[in-house]
Image (cartoon, rainbow over all chains, first blue to last red; front, side, top):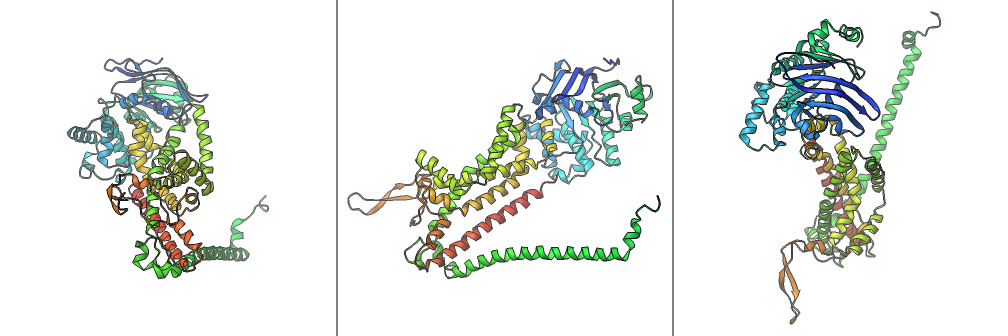
Length: 257
Length: 335
């Protein structure tokens, strides 16, 4: 098991001897991984290596589809989240998707929805939370005068920041990002990256990315995956400059992709 | 090797090729004309039929008494009041009966059964799925027999608005289930995942997001199937619709009259309850038409034609409402 010793960080989540199956197909093979508290951890690897599949295990997204099962453990602090109710897991771990997927509701209601399903009815609390989430997602100034507009009227990059605000509004312990900029133009991508960097220290972030430069720019730790296995996990600068494994060195230098 | 190679650019520049292009363009134009003329032919026949109905029925269409009179032995005095009101009441029951059941069945099949982890449930779902599609094609009179057996004989509901409405309800159920499923299918899975991912339960996701996003398409399906049900005759004759009705189903809380035991005069005998209209006898527009067409007295053809125009207009209004609703709900949603 790869162990990273850092004085100032605690382990937020721990993947232990974890495998995931689509039917009989073992898509994730005996992975061990640590997610450190309030750091950005990126997962890189060629298409089909299982990085998105592993990410979606963290909030039990696979439970929506029949014929999938998990083996091993994913510890969130000390609880195995594979043994918890999936709804409880998703209330604690937020997710931002590849394509912006705002709800067909107003900008305000998009953010408030997560609070409402948690049973929060107090209008002041909701107003205050919505504003804070929009500020944290760096979109408040752009939308504060049109909170009642439909969310679809925003641009792609704004929609994605709205989705980040939606996830932030409910104070997730871990925030999962599944290639959040792959559907965006370079300027919108830059604003999302800046946002992720600003969220460091506030929330634990796990991000899947296709873009190695992005991993270098925003992440503290990087996990390199290949055909369902975790090849190497270390500090981002180590992975990109001084990787232990041959395959990692080949991948980060662009010899295969 | 050079000689064997096909020089495509030379072929395109050849005169022969230009000729062939113009021949192909000619076929394009010709085909679009043929298709257009068939379209016009089809529409023309339809419009002609409606126009013929209109011409035949014009004597009564513009007379107010036609709409406010009960059927009568004399053609000029016979009106569609009881049939029109009967149709509305029956359709009301149909809608109230079929929408909740049909939409719930569609939601279950599409959102719950499909992702069930139990193979038995999934096999059952496949079986139901095939059969629902088949049911949509079953002749309507078969539903009449079903309604006769279940509602009239088993539940003893009699020749009532309730029996008729529920029979038509069963008739339109398969269509509502299928359109509901199609509507739910058109909601992108990214939306469902987005809601699930912030901790919503399946039911919250369905109720708060998926149903509002697909309500336009669901209502369109409901209205189209209901406008089919309005024109149904066979199943209602089977379950005992009457052809000659000179009264209206009692409105809730309206005064009820009964013959006085001593004098035999009609006196006020209390009020009707909220649901008494459900158990009233009734007739509907197509049955009234059918009755008038079948009469030996040719004067009744005018009544039948006029009632036909009203029925066509009613369907037209319903279908326009469906289109309007679809546009209204879609306008707010972009995927």
